[in-house]
Amino acid sequence: MLRIKIIFIIIMISFFSSKLNSSYEKLAFDFSFNDLDGSEIKLSEFKNKVLVVTNVASYCGFTSQYEDLQEIWEKYQDRGLVVIGVPSNSFNQEMDSNKEIKNFCEAKFGISFPMTEKVKVKGEEAHDFYKWANDNYGKNAVPKWNFHKIIISKDGKVMDTFSSMTKPTSKKFVKVLEEALSK
Image (cartoon, rainbow, N blue to C red; front, side, top):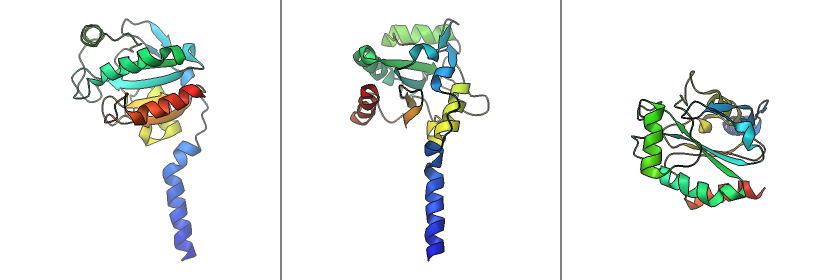
């Protein structure tokens, strides 16, 4: 019976250990993206701020979450929030060019938060930021679909992740966001 309990404890620890035992040899602020116009976005420019990094797509059923992302950006940017949209065709729902993506986001949703160029967010060809998030937080940091949200705390570590189903204006999301901003 004791042996079964020990095995059970080891299994439970393995499920949660990627989050608890991450080495964080790098922080989110060590990465950069290019924006939709090709200029570099250095995450180091956002040190001591909370980041919400979301992989986005123009032809997704969750595309209306752009409105929610813009809303939290406008509401919390003065408190140290930076929303970053990361267009990706990893789920085959994004426009072909960065110019099309930019025009769509600005015209349809009035997006004013930083948007990166189109990148891959999963697999071996994923952007280094997403590989880092997976290495340090585990599989919950890997987008399963578009509009997956990663909250990066002011210390540059993954604080929490949210699936596409969770709207950025939901009570659950806002609670974690406000907690991160208050630290």
